[in-house]
Image (tube, rainbow, N blue to C red; front, side):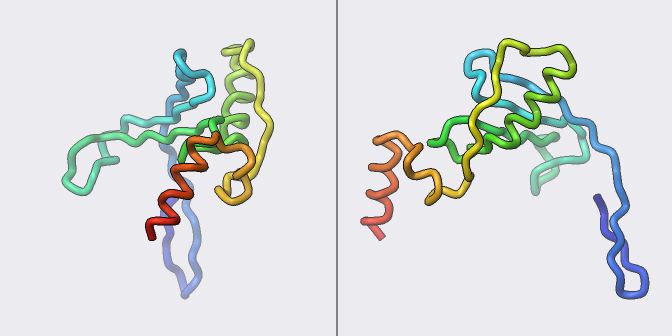
Amino acid sequence: MSATQHENVTQWEPLTLTFNVYLDPNDSGRMLLWSNDPQLTDAHGAKPGIKLCYSTDPDSADYSPANYNRLLRWLHRQGKYLDVVEVPEHSRRLMDRWGLLSLAARRRLLGRIASH
């Protein structure tokens, strides 16, 4: 979306960007949404495209079960990955998902906190 100004009022103009959806065959708990649009580049004008990752792994920085399920339901409506089931949806906030984290992730976090 792009914002335009008109008499101090911001209006949103919808723009179209095409994305592909990819369920990782080696890890069905990872869903990628990507576009290879050449206008989407890094700060140096290189590396065209953009990738967004949604994970069902609470240890992952990409943990987003609600968005994962949203994309999975869309894939199901396309007749794809019908054997993959939705996951329970929990808060993405790290402090809210503490009980879902692996022991190793908890130790890493506590170590980082203690070192500051």
